[in-house]
Image (cartoon, rainbow over all chains, first blue to last red; front, side):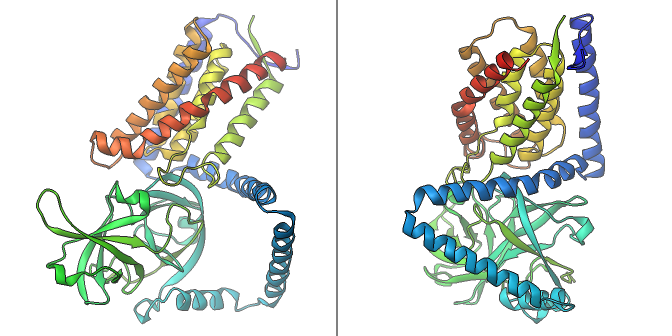
Length: 279
Length: 158
């Protein structure tokens, strides 16, 4: 009987006991989550499964590339991969005591962060879960100094902000969320507005620019960046480009459709801007 | 006397973990609709159809927790719902492929609706359609796969 772990003795009663125990456990989890606002179980699962996910994703991508590309392309692809791997290996050997400092400075420069955020620190993070279209889970939490309200961005521009922090993971509310409002400015006309997520537009990786005073303030092709108003996001982080100007169907106010530079639905790596002084 | 072998239990757990890992990778997700199959619901229900010995309730709760991790707002809510659904399913004696699809469709719709109600988004049908209908359809489409897999596991692994 070694192969068996469980015996049912009284049919329905045993099932019911298990159900009651499970219900108590799940309610406890829900209450703990609500009280502490920290998902220990999510942390555990996300961290233990993310390395496995990485391996499986890489394997699937490799199989996909073998199937899709021909032999010649495949050969070049793997040659390129090999050279890239060698490069990474060599550059890793060069990294020393200044690694974190240099990386931070480089990232700041790369992302075009201005002097306003000199005291800020950028931390790389990987997306481990996509909760829905508007929320992502990253592999950095309070252990890494991440706090609610920290800005999340990539080299292509703003992604969102930290809305929930656990010990080892955090939830990012993206700028595509209908709940997110970002104070922005049009760097061509120097006029300000508010960026707001939209259910329909988010399918195409786009958002709405609202509260623009007149049609002259916005033109197709204008670039939108953060304005720094409200001190939630640093100034001058690029966001996207205006692709359309429309009238609201209810109150005929003007709004612009902004195509976000970063493809938020596919982004894999992000950076968290920590310690940005919000005074 | 109803028993479950350790081997079968391990296979179920591995199946749950494997499909949970791959369910939201770029290759699987339909980007435009942001549709991803909530496979753990299908797996839990297909297990509940065959296993009637209490372990289905525990596996249902685990699958529900994974749903909470994946799309939920409060940890434990979907776990609670799914373990009760699994318990009820194991008590209903009529089981077939069509019934399984109906169970899955009902469960995924109900659980995602509860998730939507608990979400901070404005409650209207348009938002629900935009956020979760693609996931529901995708889950129903892929669910026969788990019916077949778990039937095989139940029959072959002793």
